Length: 201
Image 1 (tube, helix red, strand yellow):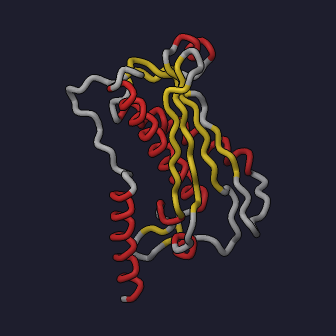
Image 2: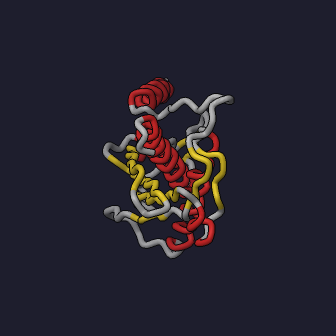
């Protein structure tokens, strides 16, 4: 019973955190024209952050590669789903040179954790767990907007189901990468929208 009460409070606290942190940004309406016609999303990078007591992962390079793919796909998805751009160009030097805007980004988080850091105990930890920085540049290289999102340990679920089954750590890491990328991308384009409204976009 006590555990159920704790979980209920976790849900309420998480919802309040999302609202207060501006996690939910309304998408563009169906008849609203996208702010920009085209953008190129380069492959986002993931930087592994050290964590005391964590072992060295033999598969770290492969894991980082998968997380970078998740970050890149999320940035592309955020741009189109929220109506920021009409077309997201494929990654490549030719497309990048032709595109009026280029998005780059980096996500930083631990990719290896000690064996005792998982599930509910991980969720209850305090402090920052992941950050993402997204920058939008014009074709000439000048910065149009840059934004950062910071996620605490509680920003994503570490357990699932009524039996509170621990979610595999790699899946949790991917969730953090997607969420951090999504928030930073939206913040960056909120800045871009503000500049466009003042004739600076």
